[in-house]
Every structure is written in structure tokens, then in C-alpha cells.
Amino acid sequence: MRYLILSDIHSNQPALDAVLADAAGEFDQIICCGDLVGYGADPNSVVDWARGNVQAVVRGNHDKACAGLDDLEWFNPVARSSAAWTIETLRAENTAYLRELPKGPVAVNGYQILHGSPVDEDEYLVAAQEVARVRFHLQTKLSFFGHTHVQGGFLLTPTGVVRVPKTPPGQDHQVLEFEDDVSYLINPGSVGQPRDGDPRAAYVLYNSEEKWLTYHRVVYDIALAQAKIHEAQLPQMLANRLSNGA
Ligand code: ZN
Image 1 (cartoon, rainbow, N blue to C red):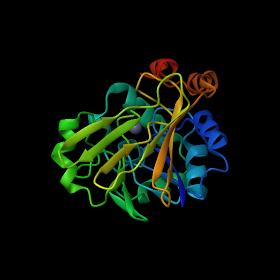
Image 2: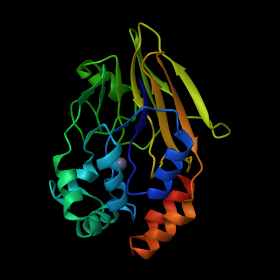
Image 3: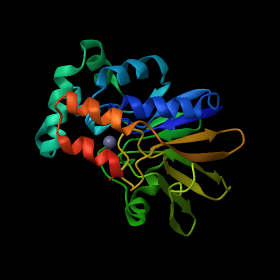
């Protein structure tokens, strides 16, 4: 099976469109590691699309907040105002869909997906030491996660945890072939709000028979996503940060 692995779409329809066009014909199923909504201006079109096209998905912290399952107190002011706008904007059937999203980890054919960490859906796994602490909670040799908006992830070897770098700026993809004695905790990167210094939309293609995956980056219409954010009168900072991927 060939999987398109996505995370952190964050209501950015132009970025999602670019990913789907770039990956067209290369996958059989679409999997998402959470945060369909929050920050961006297209929550309804992204959730409409997810309802019809995504085979497996876990909820992210923004999905939870925008479905009214979490109070907004712990969000910073910008995230809070985007969540409040999203709550008002979502149609009832889309709110209902977000409300029913399962908490990760969720098992998919032989691997698992989660939003933050295997022990806490809201925890950020950034450093190798943080991964070393939770690695034995992973149920499968391959797991996909999101939340940090940083493409890459970690190789879990018998002797320690090693970072996987993101796709280099001058390239559009990078291959990772699996080895037998290594486990993998893979972050496809963020579709709609990258924070790893590369503003291009991020995704992963995973081939389960041939045991490899490729990290991808694709240019998208950032100006269009920014114009939609202005039009929705969401905080300016949410538009600005898309330009530098930070
Ligand atoms: Zn996110």
C-alpha cells in the first residue's frame, strides 16, 4: 500500500491543494496526524475534504479546541483568537466530525499515528532526549507524528535516538529506506504552517511493501493563503509567519 502521510494542515487550503497536486497518482490512502484546523482561513473546506478523503486520522490540540472539547485558556492570544474564529465559522457537521476524531495513538495497517507523543497527545517531541524517554511506549516499529511542524523525526536504534533531517532547501524530496533493527518515529512536517525554516508545504509518501518513505516539500500559493487570512480578519502574524516558515 502507498500512503500519503499528512499533518498540521491548519485550515490552509492552498497548501493542501499543492500537496494533493504534487502527490497525485503516488498514493492509495491518505492518513493525517492531526490539526486539520486552527490558524488558517479555510476550516470548512479542509474538514469537508478530510471527511471524504482521509482514511485514518487522529485529533490534534487545535482540533480539540475548535470542537469545543478543550478550553482555550492555555492557548497563546493568537492561537486563541484563531480558535474562537474557527469555532464560530465551522459548520455543524464539521464541528461534529472534529468532535469524534480519535485520540492517538491509532493503529493503521502495521504502524501507528499520533499527534504529539505516545503518552500525551499535547506533548512536543523536539529533542532526541525527549524521544528517548517515550520510545518504549511506541507499539509499532513505525510511527508517524506531528504537532511540532518540523519535518524529519527520529531513528530509534538499539544504542540511541538519532534525528532525521528535513528535506534540504535545494531539493524537493529525500528518501529514507528502512533497516531491520531500527524503529522509526517520523514527522511528515506541516502542510499548512511549516515552522522548520522552509515555507514550502511538507508531506511524506510511505510505501509499506517496499519499506521506504520519501519526505517532500512543495511550493504553494502563500500569497493566496495570506489574503484569505486578511479577509477573515485573523491576526496578521498568522499570515506573516507563512512567508518564512517559522
Ligand atoms: Zn499544529
